[in-house]
Image (cartoon, rainbow, N blue to C red; front, top):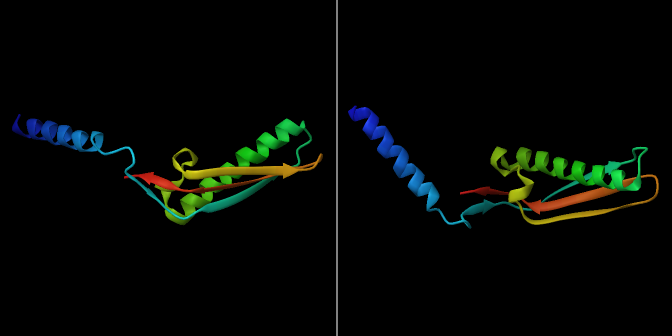
Length: 103
């Protein structure tokens, strides 16, 4: 019984510390850049979407490999930017952002 109460108290204290951490308590690293290209035989919109999604996926993999598992999330990154271009037969995109992790 005493051990159970101690564990409950520890969990509550831990939750309180995490819950009171400010939203800006993030650690960010240097900018990562990744590229992707799509030449699939589909519409221009599909090629562009595929190139954009693949560039972001490549960015995530590079961020993870460079800085670790906690930095792989595109949604947590600062200064996110995806530039796309290309012609009628292929589209290419470049994703760049500063990977961040919480706390």
